[in-house]
Amino acid sequence: MTFLILIASSSFSYSLTYVAHRKEVGYDGWRLDFVRGFWGGYVKDYLEATEPYFAVGEYWDSLSYTYGEMDHNQDAHRQRIIDWINATNGTAGAFDVTTKGILHTVRHSKQFC
Image (tube, rainbow, N blue to C red; front, top):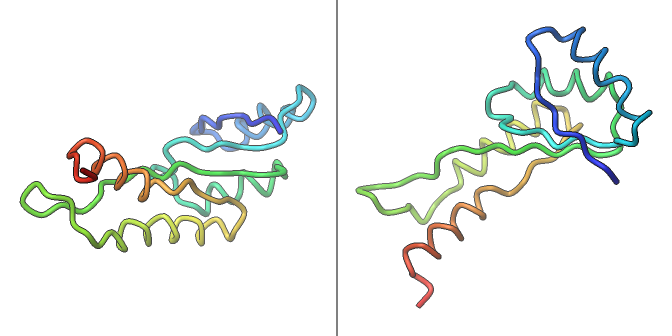
């Protein structure tokens, strides 16, 4: 499986014309960068028009902190990712950046010792 990273254009029709040929050059899926900047409904339109085998988005957002310490409950962060997936009507998944962010914070604060 070969992925193409989507860089969205302000012109939906131009973007679709450009990406319509992706299968001809061997791409069959999408890795969508910074999807927090795009409503999932717009992404759904792209995906339905290009019919990828698989699509995954990278929804980066800030974890919750109180007084400089990461909060233990990150459910709101995770829910924003789920809300984006729901807005795509299930046409895309998303990386679990919540867990990645937690692990990154734990590693750098040496809380695992």
